[in-house]
Image (cartoon, rainbow, N blue to C red; front, top):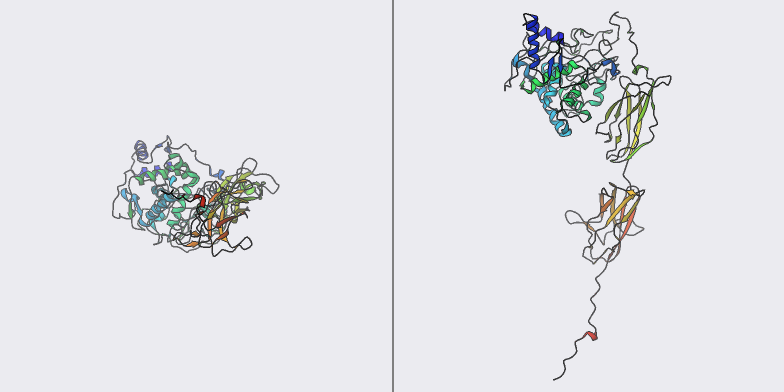
Length: 585
């Protein structure tokens, strides 16, 4: 990073002193709290997180990008000025003034739509679209200056460097080359540079076409927004924003560069036509396992602004995507020592037990496993990703469907608690060793909330006259194994007899919203106290004893008697009550 700043300043600086003054001025125009240390490096006072050593990430998959390369160009010293119209295209000599503030129209629209969606789905995150723009600038130069089609898909793939452990994380293929075209090692893909293993769980459909495509800027921007908003972060808090950015790419220089662009975009941006955006020129990975062949679609600092790479030209067999080699001896197999995750043979269950819960409840058991070698030795400090597979609305605590856990000193990884949704049935939770294909599955079951007992809350007789209405409403309480049974589904039916549970066609009835006769109520549910109060009952002209049957999930049944009878006639006056004749005159 310091070397790059020096390159930018060398042209206009006549002396070391002048260069140092320019560096200080540059720092003053960047993100709040950014300063320059005595080595010419940027530091951010707002954050106290040390730079993460990528070798400690066990496969490098602790980030969205796999800690791949990124553009190191900083915004210009002068503040941007928003303008309504388009600006000129890239300047051959490099970025100048307001051109850097121009964001291609489709790319800008994707950032704003993603931020709007996050305001609805995760309002507490407070994601600003300018942060997405800053990351998009640093990762891909706003999709190579907006080289996208009308749907937001890049006209050619944007691929990061080969993640074969030579200067980068060692991430073996996880997608069979489906996204990055490499069946040996992974590469970061698309305008927001997701590695395939991260996209597999973080990918989103941002443009509503039913496909989650990392090469589509709408999909990638929405996925990046959700990735940044994980773990209940509030990005209006500087520490949370720093943590989110470092989670995207664990580098102090990366953090400083993103914050610089974020602050720059906050001061003003404007839309430019797709394909005319300014493409950065300098990369953190320049020359490090990053020398694309002519026609390659690899994301490279040598890409010429405004001239998209030609798609579809495959690499020659034996190229950088087919076999790793020792950088000191071309063609020689790598002798790099195995990582901790390479020693893991399988994931053993750590007495998880039966996973079962009622709808809406938290599972009383957590998934727990141990990473072990072939010899049965526990492996600490490796990452295990737990993923709830599609087809259920169950989540982990916090509402996420994916959780990554580092094994402890005993090699054990315990997933967050599962929370059942409203869908019943079995679902799978897959545990995968990050960066490897070592995996295991767990089956969890969600059952309906049940009641085994129903009882009326009152013993008052339920009576009515023909054509009238019952004075008391039926209320019952549901319990399960002696405890309150809340949220239990129930049905109430006026049946023909104790032996014939079919719906009666005469006698008492309920009314629907339109006042029509209804003798079966479905979709009922007990409240938080296990109580269920039925609507008011009415009677037709039929008299006699009628039955109301209430049933619940779990088999609890209660039959209630309803009596409809004519009112007793008023007693006639007796002779003794007759008035005495008036005495004769």
